[in-house]
Image (cartoon, rainbow, N blue to C red; front, side, top):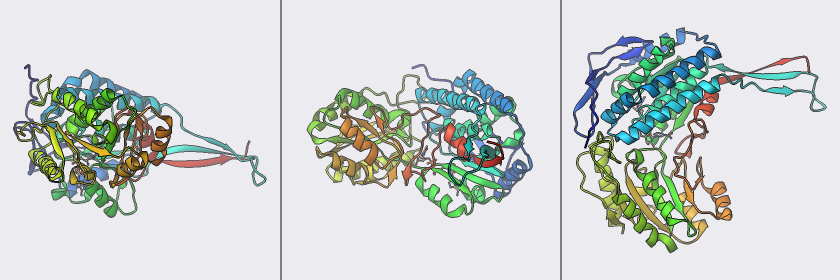
Length: 482
Ligand code: NAD
């Protein structure tokens, strides 16, 4: 094993309009693999959050499209040049394996580069008005303007760089100001990203990063009067709290998922098993769009389950800093214990564990569980780790769709079939934001629309293009010439 060198300990400060700000109270950031302290960040109080919003609100960005494109592209290039440094930091504070962290850094490059390219595209529309007997010889034009107030962005732990990028890049592309609160579990990557942005020429007032958790800052990120929009990615519990607390503000909620991979009787089982195992275990199964339930029809379930076990056995689970590791830790031991408990609970209802390994702290091995009842906690709730649960369904598409739609979530889905009649039904009847045929539910490009319905979100999409729309106000203006 040739382990990746750990990053040096970081005693970090917040970045409030570019100024370094400390507090007496500190939060330790732990490496989930060995519980060593990777760094510390300040525990912000409500007054720090208020200061960040006041400073952001006082600044009115006037960057031209060209200037924004230059900053965004420069950021992309700096991230590409420092890909290994970022990956090292992600692995250290999240326990994600080196392969996953490197991949995340390349995804972030795409986010920044796509935002740069979209910034210079004029998205105005023109409506001719002489199109009905009520019309006139005029034209209506649209233009998108930044929000009047500030964007409040709150992010989760599972993609410490990419999730943060998806909030900030579209905001800068549209000349907005952001106050970001990354999760207290993996805040170091977000702070390092802020420094890259300042280096790339971003006026520091356009981005502040406050650190900490609600126990010291309360609901300040949600209720600040200078915040026009709250964009949140995280759990359903917190998302619903934000929806109940934000009041008269725009809110964009990207919440949990419980995505199925559906395997029909005509599927190439080898290919389907590969999608099942990679989809359930990449990023230690901690993707909102990870495969969290595999719905396979009875007639092919035995053969499919055997292939899944073979593929899961090949995965190397261990030290996240070992470049050969396929599955690192989950975020902490508490989460790993929860998965264990849910698997045991499923066993009580008839499920069979076909492959696993003893848990060591937050290191939870890919665990194949077959014959999982579709309504037990393991697959009814979001199990945010590398469990590979196989749910056997009757050979009947209506039943498969019913079972798929039976949870509170509606984020994404993957489907393994070549039958066009099946595809047509899945696309129209699955209650989800995305249907990927012959791909994992998580497949997307960073620019395409992305987001869920039901408990997974309010239906507003993310992805650079959609986020740029939700971060702007449309102004219409008209002229008396056709
Ligand atoms: P979480 O909801 O526990 O925390 C997310 C963030 O909310 C953290 O920064 C946390 O400190 C903050 N927070 C909590 N209460 C707050 C309050 N009152 N005010 C302000 N901030 C508050 O989520 P997590 O455990 O970090 O992330 C995992 C979850 O995120 C999973 O459910 C996953 O599916 C979801 N997720 C969704 C998407 C998506 O796009 N739909 C993407 C990634 C992750």
